[in-house]
Length: 459
Ligand code: ADP
Image 1 (tube, rainbow, N blue to C red):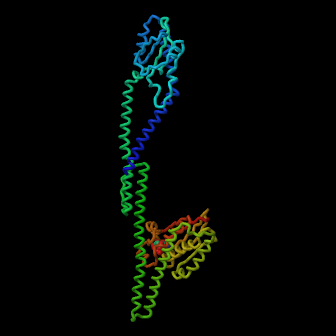
Image 2 (image 1 turned 90 degrees about the vertical axis):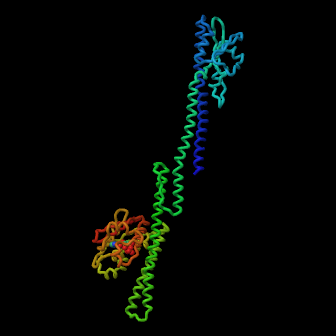
């Protein structure tokens, strides 16, 4: 956490530093390309107007006149043909100027020292207080020839502004640093909170709390983290419940088997009692066998998505076969079964889908009323088929419907207690139908019965 904080701080200050260098280079280039010629031109015109005024007014005192001009912010150098020179305004830092340049101007030419001032990367020519960095114009006053060199006195022009800008710059830098320190803290804080939460999650404490209410990426991250923690908690609960359910479902038939084998070991029991106990023991073994088969199937369905061995087959025929196999149980319960099973071909895993119809039909028989009825139908609509298995059984409430696909869930134990079952059948149905990209619809009219409709894509 500390290192992230420092990194962020150093990077931000680094960016500020680098960008100020870039800003300087860019503005310097701008000065060299655009401002320098403009400046040169402007000062040249000013110098020419001074020369023209001096020429037109031979009676004025030239020194006073130039003194006045320098006082409003110019540095001036005046030289005549005999080498008599005078300076007005602030002194030049570097007074070097070749004699040939002076003669050049005295001969009536203009000297563009500002435009010709050499390019230097880190020195803006504008600020160089040198005699070379001036504009030179010829000046005639009272019949005498001079060369006048002039440049703006930046110190005088910028003196007060200078201080203001200096303070502004210093304040900007100090304020930026202080703000970077605080904003970095603000940015990094949720990360350290998340780290803490991750640690407690890895210790198995799912009930983490994160008071991060931000609406940015970090807020989203912590919201997702909380969702993940809740999901993990739910999964952990489910795992615990699953294990306790399995243990119970294995333990109770085993203890029944143990009890009845003990009874059978007694010499005094009668033959018909023995037959009865054997049938109970067989029933318990059947229950255990069904349970392990269903668990194995669910485990393999959970493990891989490409478990489906799809091919084209006739669902109508498949359900027809199944109904035939169940005929004796249907008759035994006195149930009326009607069906409309047209030949319908779909692409799917025949063996797994057979398990779906098997579970639904077995439930429709198990949870039916005596002398009830079952209706099975297949309907094709668009790209899907709808297989409906409707019974006149005990029905389901809405809250039960919400849970029947949960593993080990058995609705209303008082009613179902007498009916054999594991609570895994419908979760298997749901998983298989989902793997096929289909849906399970449940429709129950209270105590009138239930209709399960399986919607499956044809292809
Ligand atoms: P079980 O092995 O208990 O039948 P299932 O997963 O197949 O497990 O069904 C879960 C529960 O849903 C059952 O215990 C039962 O309470 C309810 N149920 C399933 N099918 C029907 C039905 N056709 N009519 C009424 N209740 C049903």
